[in-house]
Image 1: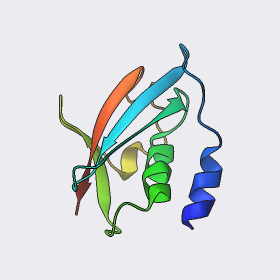
Image 2: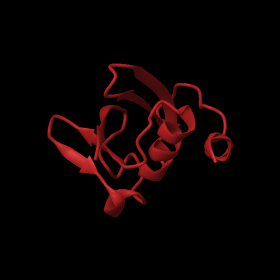
Image 3: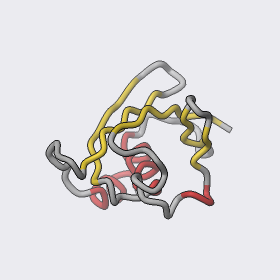
Image 4: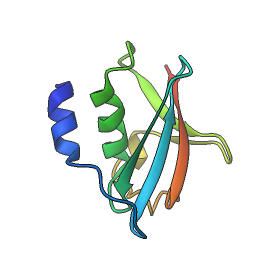
Length: 96
């Protein structure tokens, strides 16, 4: 499952005007960052986190702090640009 999600992400795009830089912070303090096309969906961020295998928890949300926004199930189909995460975003993993 983890490998499938990693493959579905494709290769990381080069920096450019239509590329979004995303930093994900985990409860352990670990940080991971990756570039995505600005047209990628919120679902692809969850797939990225799942592909890393850093979490023991099945249930979590990706959250931004300023302003606080929870990118939950109702937002999975939004593009990073539509969600206001382009050109860069810092998100936290919040365990349920």
